[in-house]
Image (cartoon, rainbow, N blue to C red; front, side, top):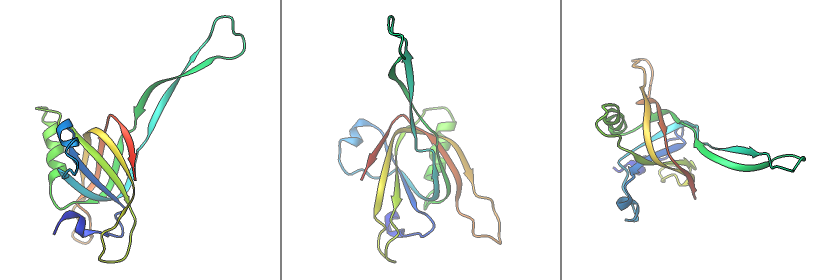
Length: 163
């Protein structure tokens, strides 16, 4: 059973796929995700442009405004499930300092459709060169039905949108 055949999971509205960020894999069309998961919360998909104000000599009425540097927020995924430990392995690889292995991330908002059908994506956000910064496993509790990943945080270097 492939990962996408598991949908819809009614509480997990966000599918996250991580892909190799090398230019070679981007140009080959259909890419296979290195790791994937479903999450019930996703925060931090944001981009901010820093305005710069310039006072022009001889102009006494206001300032000229230009756009400065663009910064991106830390994406926080909460309460997730995955079928393999690849997200933890990616975090562990990066945290050991040998090589900062960057992946492209796609966060897809799912449309929960009819039972037994694959849930189509309503909107997909694409982030380039993602690096994991925090991994938190779910608490172990025999009385509860906890999920595998409590939180995954990652930073990235670019934001785009697909439909």
